[in-house]
Length: 403
Image (cartoon, rainbow, N blue to C red; front, side):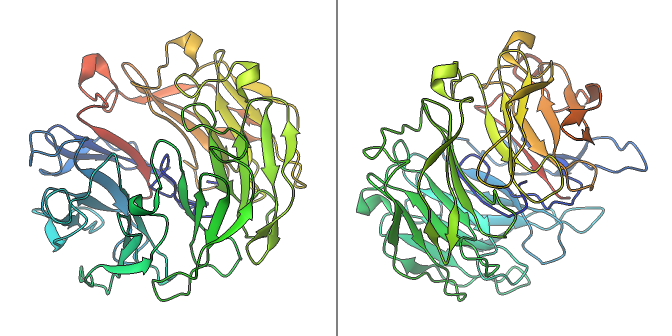
């Protein structure tokens, strides 16, 4: 993505960049993958006959399904937060373990009382050990189950008594991210609360220091920011290895740069575009921060009406004027948020984000050729496309992951 491994509600599956991202789809009859390779054209393969609507009874309104490296081999495994616990199917290179193994009886609908509309669950390497732990924003705060290797997870521990439902944090008002804000290589917590953006620094052992307010903006009551109107991102915008804050507000893109050790500078209007005053809407126009040039600084990618617009990062908290880079993947070409997921992700291993979209009848890609330019759009597969509801958002999940 933008050079860091930020994990968010919108993008809970980080991809390595440079890397070659593949497709992992949780279909109605199981997990289907399409490996990405520069040397051949593989076909989609069903790798696990579980984690699906018909295969195991998985439901999008009850069960979170993700891709994450749980073994330390840099390949994504299958992870599902099911009815009675967390299940994992490990990636063995050519195959996946089937049936999957339940690794902990917690973080689930009937094991712990976890709910999609109240509690966020992530897989994240919060200790910088190469293996993803389980991280859940529950009622009492943030709970962590440490990954000890070999699919052995410790009992859930309260890592910080903040950022939870019981403390007033709500999915429809307050965003929560995992990102490195002090440059130590470990993921910290960044929460967009009611009046302030808060950070809680990782202690390195699966727990976090007390939360502190760092920005009095980008929030529901401080600035009038709304989840349904204003995307917000935590990403490295300067290339220093520390996450900054960016938001697409009313007038355009606002930025607060990281001053180091988790403190942040003033909020500035960095670009008069990608905001609601320019016609951008969350229910029509996905927006991302991704490295398009390979300089490890996040650029802006927006899927607008006419197609894909980009704005290149100047490296100082400002951006170049937005330009239409691809006249596809937009509203005018029939792309819809509730049917057609679109991502900006490295597909070639050159460290620059490409574009991939799951369309009505095909999956399409546009490869990054450098300097903010892209090759012509081409179809790569008719699997994973909406195709009359075969891959509908209410029954299936599609992610990009390093397979």
